Image 1: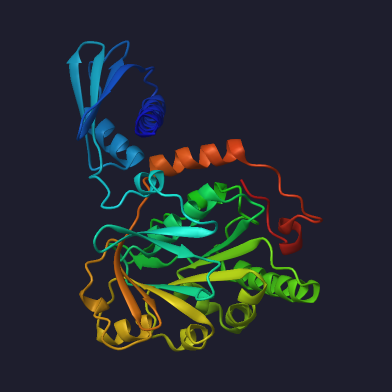
Image 2: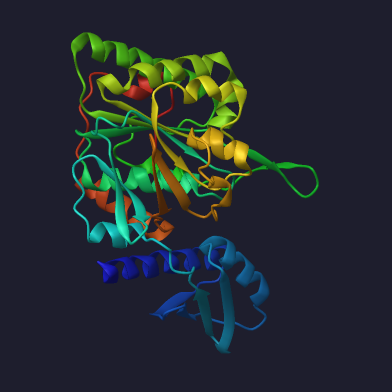
Length: 370
């Protein structure tokens, strides 16, 4: 499996390098590649290399490959060497972890607890209704949502689990006061074959989606249907909550009534102390995954208990899992962009069409997905 993942990474990086070269009308051919422990080297053949803007190429390749460092060296006329420093090894690699695990059906892999014990979340457990994922920027909330979704999709067919994803994209101020969207890790999940509808990223779309899902809850209750499990991932709920009652009222009703008919909601927030969020956090949230927070007040609101000490967590996937009075410290598992791409390719090769009477995109009045 490791060799397959390495071959896939080299293939994708080769395509990314070729794409950058083509942008500058450079007909480059990758002759060979070699992967070391920290650096991967690509040798390129070009008709001519004299006068090439090597620093500009380095910057373009760095942005395209999203790696820590890229070096471009002219070895001789007509030959370039592109050296790519790979990101540091993930503290807990999801794909490595899943290779040695056989989780029960509908159990998500969260990471490793103290002592190296794998931490799983069984969504069929009577202890699990809805989940809160809380922490400041850099805590690893979105990464954990991505891990949860992929670990479920990789081991469960669409007939057993399906996803709805709402992503409230926050904005941060740029250098001159302009606003730019924060880089987000969830959009690749748009290609999960388990997705019921394209990812929602607006307040209006979230309000329509939650209202539709509430109708589905009522329908299931009337028909006594609880299958398949529908997992609703809501990232950056703080941003979506600005939509007020059209978003919050159906969401609260989903939290209260959804678990009984096979719905599980996973809500991600930066600041659990917000007044608009308090009714939601008291509505059948039984599991709390808490990352680094700013202070003791946020730690208390996020964990739902005093003295969790979440304000002393290190960020970057350092989490507490809080269930009632039980607190488990764990390092969240992470999946690299290349491994995610490979996993999505495999899922699409294995997937079968989902038979529904009317497409969800029509019922939600949303555009078709990718």
